[in-house]
Image (cartoon, rainbow, N blue to C red; front, side, top):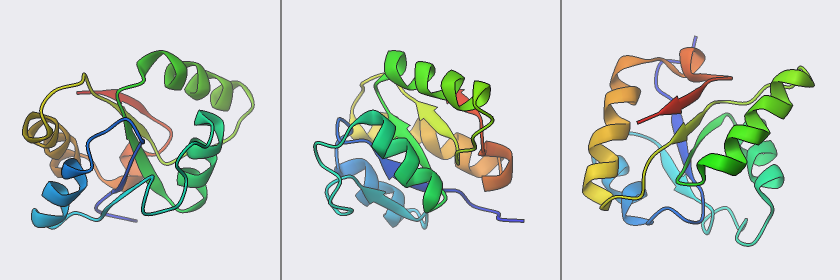
Length: 114
């Protein structure tokens, strides 16, 4: 069982969010650090699934569709957290509630809204 989820920020999420999560002791990375800038949403989700990162995004519409496609195709991912576009500090406050409440295994294959 994996206790804490690792977080991967979609390219539309402020990279300060990753720094703030790291400062709180969570593992976090960005699209830029992983050299995935400009890749499709499908490629981003496949990447996060392969490296067991849950994906944090503001892009609700596209990732809701991808989540449903994964379910219908019986594919797995490490979780998708959808957040409204707010300040980095507010995003972190919202995301930390999820990370402190649910294990990585409980987040896997879930579409969560904060």
